[in-house]
Image (cartoon, rainbow, N blue to C red):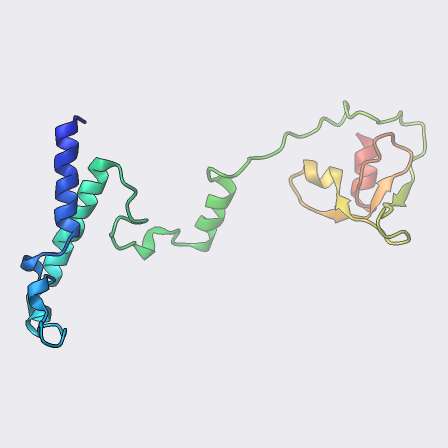
Length: 176
């Protein structure tokens, strides 16, 4: 944008933002005797004039790259959100901020797995902050199946000490 255009836009911006007699906010609308506004002040101003001023101001701000209002003066449509609760859940699961599913670990290639001949024993996960109380972690087998379940047990004999539920997951983890 050249210098002359920018100066003209700044001049227009000042004209729009400074009050003048056309919109009833001038010095002439005050009573000099007791500094009270003239009753015609309220009759002179109208909503259409203020809407036009707002439009002009926003247009000039856009050209001058001045930050504008948050919603640009337009009314927000309340019904733009999901129409159904399930649609909202789908948006959360598949939206732009969703990280997607984690890759599944292959059963045969898990590190720390010992051969089938050794005995595996479940033990309670110790809590380092509070000795004597158990600590909860996510079950490794349930996590691979896409479930989110916490357990307080892990395999004592495996090298990587995978946390797993006692009943179905501990056995299934060591079968594969």
